[in-house]
Length: 88
Image 1: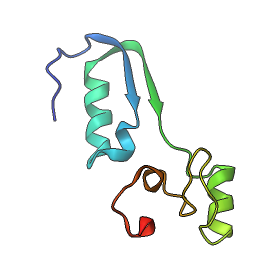
Image 2: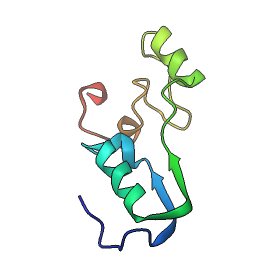
Image 3: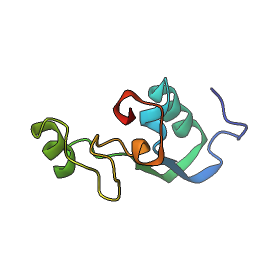
């Protein structure tokens, strides 16, 4: 993977949920390092799998609902009609 940017040409790289969804997150970080200027900044965001909501869901047998959903499965997509087994 190579971005169409020159080396050391960007002073800020923002990676919202990129590392958790990419097949090769180390490649993403290497490419980020390549295009980032010296003293540049990287902003990385992701889901907090150790959150209190997640811990509650794990210890309650998966019946805790995500805020804003009507499904008792805990699957956000089920509240909007996904095709997973929890919605049937």
